[in-house]
Image (cartoon, rainbow, N blue to C red; front, side, top):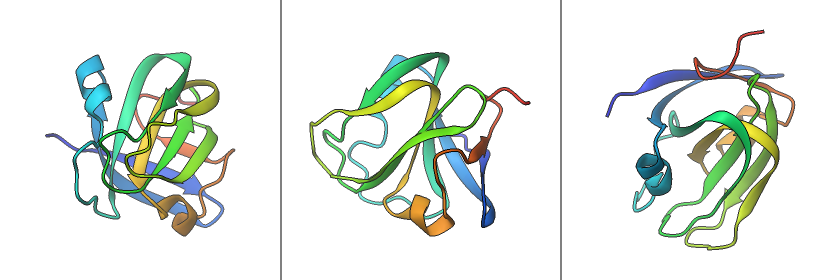
Length: 127
C-alpha cells in the first residue's frame, strides 16, 4: 500500500504522518479494521471527494483511534478522541467534511491537535 505524506499544523508546530488513502467504498468500509497496532507516525485518510456529513464506528476495530473530521479547506471540524475499540455506536462528524483522518488513540492530544487547526494534504483545497 502506498503511503502519502500529510501534515498537521497546530500551535505546537507541524507533525508529519504517513497515511494510507481510503478513497473508494471498499477501502473506506474496511478502514483500519482488524489491525492490532498502528505506528505513532502512521494513519489512514478517508477521502470522500465531496463534502458531506459522515459518521464512523469502531466495529471490528481492535485498537483505540483518534478520528479527526476535516472540512474541504483542511480545517479540523471535530475530533473523536480514543474511540472505543469494537463499538458499533456511530460517531458523527457534526458537519460537512471531505476527509477523515484516523490516528492511533491519543496522538491528537500528544501533538496538540484541536478543532480549527489545519491538515495539509493534496485532497484539501489550498487557501
